[in-house]
Length: 114
Image (cartoon, rainbow, N blue to C red):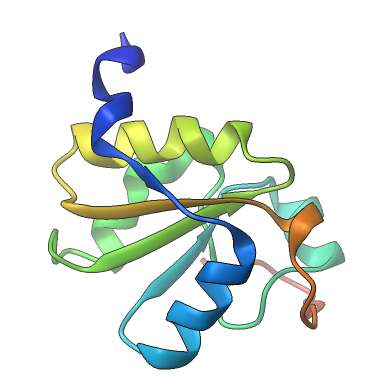
C-alpha cells in the first residue's frame, strides 16, 4: 500500500539536511524512533513521533505546508513515516535517513518532546 507514495517523498543526505536546517529555521525535524531511542540521543530541536504514531503530528503541526525533515536510526522507518505523512496530506516531506549518519551533536532528554 505505502509503495504507491514512494515517489512523493524526497530524500537527501544528513550532510545536506544539516545545511538546510542551518539555513531555514522553519523546517521541523521529526524523529520517528521509539521514545527510549529518542531519549538516548536525538538531533537537537527534533520532535519525537514514533513511526506507528506519526499521524498524531497533525495535533502539533496542523499546517500541511510545513517543511518536515524525517529521520530514524538507519532510514527505513523514516521512509515509511514519510509515506504515511504524504498519505495524510503533508506536502513538503524529506527523508533525511538515519541518525547513524549524523555527524553533529546529539541531545539527551528525560522525556520525548511530544
